[in-house]
Amino acid sequence: MSHDIQIFPINETFIRIACERNIAEELNNTFKFRPPNYQFTPSFKNKMWDGYIKLFNIMNYSLYKGLLPSLVDFANENEYNIGIDESVFSQPHTEYSDEYLHEFISKLDLSARNKAITPKSYQFDAFKKCVNDSRLVILSPTSSGKSLVIYMTMMFHLKHNPGKVLIVVPTTSLVEQMYNDFEDYAKNIPVKIESVVHRVYSGKEKTTKLPVTISTWQSIYRLKKQWFDDYSAVLLDEAHMGKAECIKGVLEKSLNATTRIGLTGTLTDSKCHSMVLTGLFGPIEKMITTKELMKRNDVSQLDIDILLLKHDDKNCKSHRRSAYHDEVKFLITSKERNKFISSLCGHASGNTLILTNYVNDHAIPLHDMLTKLYPTRKVHLITKSTPTIVREEVRKSLEHESNAIIVATYGVFSTGISINRLHNIIFGSPSKSLIRVLQSIGRLLRLHESKGTAKLYDLMDDLSGETKHQNYSFKHGIERINIYDSESFTYNIHRIDI
Image (cartoon, rainbow, N blue to C red; front, side):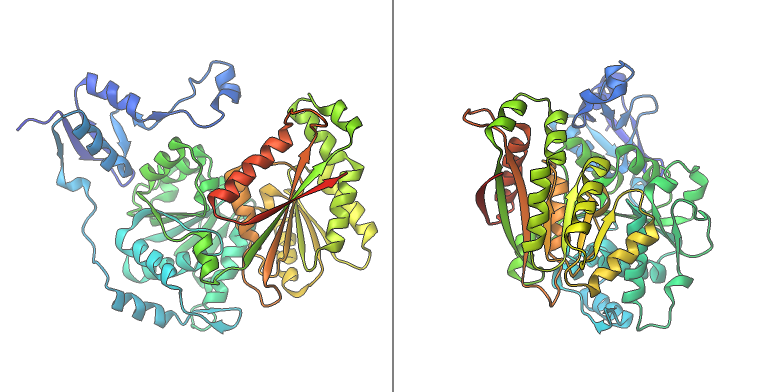
């Protein structure tokens, strides 16, 4: 039988498609997507880009290997005969039994904070998926133990497969945190992590003879393909944060990586984002939800107070029709609003994290105000310019403090950073990002004996006055409430005149 579409292997990243030109044009239209906010990018505005990310290369007829199931669906829907060369599929590997995997884990003699640990059932299931499926995206919320899954998968790969392991994270802080987590897990075995794992970020040597590399994707995505040749496994943590060009820059060059695992707590609603991850890794598998973790008491219970700040008539009239940036500028520089945040820190019990988008106009003034107001308390300022070693020192020190305040930017402290002894978070500046909101909440949910219920204070600003007009910050607050509803989080709304 002749085939309308014939599939051939290229490498572990791409497949080649043989077909007529008219079918190629259809594939080009099927596998192209516009990412969110494409219309605001300079390249689109300057007519240098049409706004589409194209996953099918119409020049050489190649497609991401992970999109093979979608390609088969396309062929079936359009009644095209499709033939797939058997060599497209990776060499068959052993399907490891639960018994064998449990035995392997027991030999790791896992520990955390000097206590022996046993993986939870959902952590074991994720690990089993990683070693048996080898190509997938694991969707599992913050505090579900993704670093433990990565560690177990890494150790399993080193024992059972040739080639090196590349672990990619979004920030330098997470390079250090991941390394420290591995040291913690490995305390009871003779293998020293320093003899296994090399760290790469700005200023660090990129080449190593060690079998494992942890790197930020910014440090390596522009490197030549030869650098990636030795890596047979790539594990991408916090996959939701990766810019398309960074993820593509790493995975498209990892031509020999038969194991490709993406891990994330949240995915955007963008079809393009999901398709890129599926193409480069494999299908998306949901492991467990935050609400299920709460029911199991594997994370802290969450108490959300939405503080609806009702601004006075004068400011409402002045800013009712302001542009977004002007409204935000007013809110973050408002002395009354910052005094309210400072007072809130005084009433909150335990360690408190204030998150904001803005450094010079908000984080620094807030830090100065809090330092003067609470001279006996530790008040930390963490921004992008804070050295990685200082961020890590602050993170570790919080495990031994009970009344500290951290003022930090969302970009640095909303994702990945693990602080068990964190009791409160204050959303200090407006945001509507699904990922940012859920990742920030994730910082709060880690268990610690010093807390029962974790507290989120969500500041929502109302500048409507006596009108029905909804200002930007108010609308963003509504979108955050929709996120809480979708996650089945409970919350209370309190109106406060400011």
